[in-house]
Amino acid sequence: MDQLKVTIAGEITLSKDPGGSMKKWREIFGISQTELAEHLHVSSSTISDYEGGRRKSPGIAVINRLVDALMEVDKNRGGKVATQLSRQEGPVDKVFDIHEFHSGMNGKEFMEKIEGECIANPLRLKELTLYGYTVIDSLKVILDVPVHEYLQMYGKTPERALIFTQVENGRSPLIAVKVGRFATELRPSVVVLHGCQKVDPVARKIAENEKIPLIVTMASVEKIIATLKGNES
Image (cartoon, rainbow, N blue to C red; front, side, top):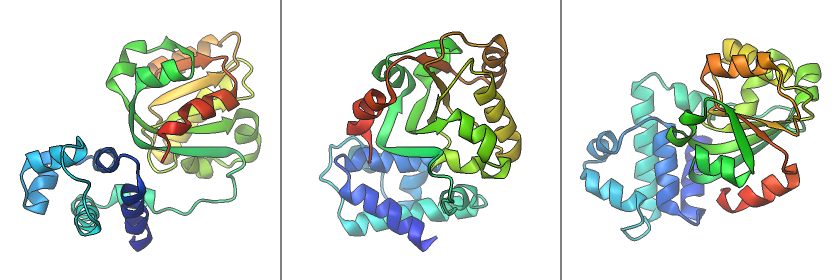
């Protein structure tokens, strides 16, 4: 867990938007401003001011206290978030190209940035906050990656978009997501089918049943990554 603390503290310290990064990690751990403030013995407005950039960027001492508080609250809840975040990355990084954001991005904004069209559960997009995305070779994930390693495609948090490339009709990626949910108890916030001309009705149905917004985009992967790069940590 010490390495996880260093990772979080380092990201906040080096971030272009320390307040946004603080907010991202608080939300990843599922902790409210009030709960965090109580744990740190400060007012909720203090947390709000830091996250909103209305206070001077916190020093390392404040950041360390914040990280300790996140870990302690999570530990009192069973430590599930810290355990997930602390897992070691395996050898399947060529299949899972993982990117993290320095602060949350609204789902609708994400769709616009990647020049996508939402074909299932579009109303959910504006309610979602994404903290990263993973570009996945759909052929390799089906053929080469054991189900028990699907956890790795979620990076630091499942509150992300999974962008599947090499997509023919979208059925296999959505089945992988559904199977992966049973194996990992996780589901992505958004699924993106890259270059898919005609989406299989089964894929759309799975997305609807899982309540996952399904986006189709024809923008090149290189363009998507370049467009999102400014938001990455």
